[in-house]
Every structure is written in structure tokens, then in C-alpha cells.
Image (tube, rainbow, N blue to C red):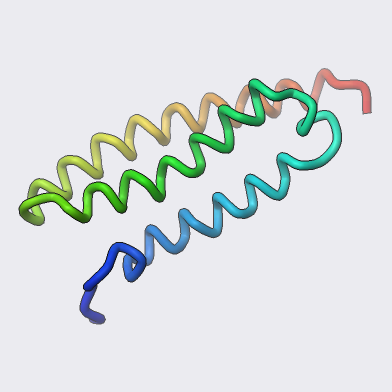
Length: 96
């Protein structure tokens, strides 16, 4: 197993970064781009995953990091799920 020296070395952070890139790219097109509130909510939620991992990395101990990261990510996952559901509803009801 590779040594983690920086938060950028954490696979979960790398995956969150890729997710964030994809969300930002998807949010630039069509009606989604014009729905500023929804777009901002979803892009903030995606970016928060990376930020929470980076912030948790500076925790005092591994146990602190686990607790901080889990609680924040669990909450963020729920918020992201709700935002994605809202976006899906929006797509179903939009005139495309």
C-alpha cells in the first residue's frame, strides 16, 4: 500500500476531483446552465467532497480524520442525493 503524504494521494479525493470535473462540465449545457440555483447547489455539493477530505487530512489523529470525514461525507452524500433527485425531476419536466 502506498504511503499517503498529501491529501492529493488519497484515492477517494482523486475520485471526488474527477466527479467534480464531470459535474462542472455537465452543468455548462442547456437548461441546466440557466438554472443557476440548481447548478450552484450541485456544483458546490460535488466540490465539497474534495474539500472535506482535504480538511479532514489535517486532523490530529486517524480516528479524528475518520470521524470528521465520515460525518461530513455522510451528510454531503444525502445532500447530493437530494440535489440529483431534484435535477432528475427537473429534466423530466423540462421541455427539451
